[in-house]
Length: 264
Image 1 (cartoon, rainbow, N blue to C red):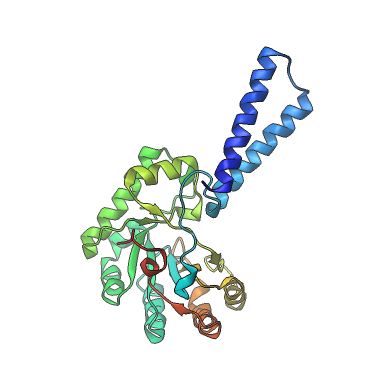
Image 2 (image 1 turned 135 degrees about the vertical axis):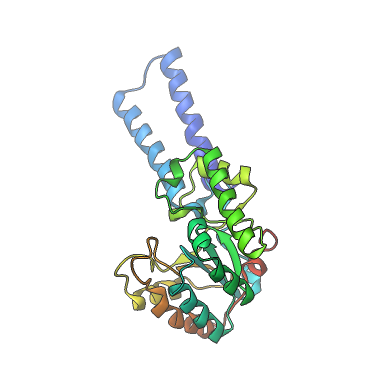
């Protein structure tokens, strides 16, 4: 069991013990109760915002270091312009990648999905829409959303992906339960460039990723902007990222080769 999940259990049991003491013996001082409450909330928030902690459910965020490879993953597409530019850069480097697509965009641009699959890349789902409050949805709503995105992908390329990366990357207890009901594996990341932010500097994105490159790393980038209203810095940063991977003696490998079974 991940250490963060054990910590959550310890904090939860401690909270119940304090409540029992208050009922059976006498209440603890108010200041102590407030500190304990704040600490518990902070722990839970960290668990949601840092998926690699695996506090509320299993998350694959790093692959096999013995592979000597890294996996490139892209979120928020497909887009008819920016995704194709990413595909061209990957083709030049003969580098496979995994694209976590939004269902509603895939529904509008199924030909892009066909292009990337024909080019040898893999497909995961990123939800149907990029709802920034996704972590607050009910497990049944999350499960239905994932399955809706899966159906769009399956209709376009005859692939039933079992990889899922939640919008914004947050994994709440509801997200974890919804993914479990949908039968998908949550994929996180070990290094990200923050390239999906408007105004991100490509050089900084590339340097940020280079610092985290190691065997088994799962790299998070974007092949489209969330709202398709700007060009992600990944398009300029990707050549530098690929150079960094080669310079470190690593190679780009398919995500499935890095983490084993569970993909599309």
